[in-house]
Image (cartoon, rainbow, N blue to C red):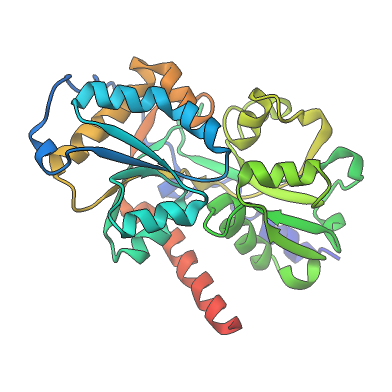
Length: 324
């Protein structure tokens, strides 16, 4: 049975955002960088962009093609997209210096930062519709399952998205354990679906009773909120929210950053940052495609804002070592 202490743990802090997650003031009014070749192209002759897994490859490449072309046209260097099979693929590509930039979840960034001994850094995160820079993890079930609460998930199966996903594994696992749930005994089984989209599909197909995925937590829940995996699946015709029920929501999570290798020229980082700060206003359709829905552009971030997630990664690694 879920106790009062567990419920208190699950809800604590949900109404209060830490400083790292608060809206960072009004969005900056920034012009797109001037079109033309750059001196940094001598060190970065092509821009290789890693694309996280969790969505079928054709859809990923299609969503990012306008973005790729715009970067290429702006800076006059070839831009290539590298879709990875899973989150670990992008992390490994950073370690091997096979990509220059990628949008990542906070946990993926933290893992890449640890794997490269600080060899990557965050530039910007997406702003939500209210100007904030956080989102949530949600647990979703089929409405016809009869499951209406986390308490009713005892003895049921749960699909995680990916072992390197913030909202699809690290945060929900941490919050549930912190609230007193023994993950190994509370659920009949847990498993990795291979990505956020795949996790929801697994619930639709009754392979799992529930899955965790990400959403902005703002706007109309019946449409999958303003932004996130649920919204993207609704827009692609893959999901009818009327068939599903959300039974749990996490505390706010810092949005995942656009990540760059630390060893690229500072001028490159400045140009890429300016490009993204201007993107939503100058090219709203491309922004919406990349960010899977509406928002208010981007905000600058620093590594320090992700230190709590880095610590969670360290704790998770320590737990795995104790289990092995």
